[in-house]
Image (cartoon, rainbow, N blue to C red; front, side, top):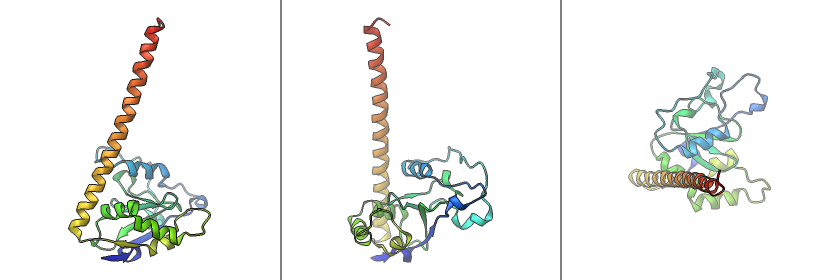
Length: 193
């Protein structure tokens, strides 16, 4: 089956935060990166929201399970509990499912990894000097998807492979830290310190 993103999701662009005078609990690139790398259960982590956004920002506020797309990096991620109620700015759009037709993890896989999406984006942004996704282009992208059971399997496999990749990166980082500390101690011993 195949449908346009606009037919599957409510799409909301972020605010122009440079014009806002009141303090806003803004969703930042750091939040996006945290959501991108935080594929684990974060229920033990606390939401670092210091203040509550006013009701005027409710339509820009994130809910758990929303999908955030960075218009600059053209990557999708699912909102975690740490980002709930934050307000998106003009560098992001959020997608909220209209129905249960599409598995969100499958969508994230398809959007981030599919050659079909890359071809559509290349065609739509042909001639652009700055590679930046626009909400208009996003709405017109077409998603091809199998039945719900297959979507769930593909989405789960994608999330598990991302978790494995994150764990491998953490392991490599810890190994480098350990080895650099080990070699520092070795050189100090050799120098008689």
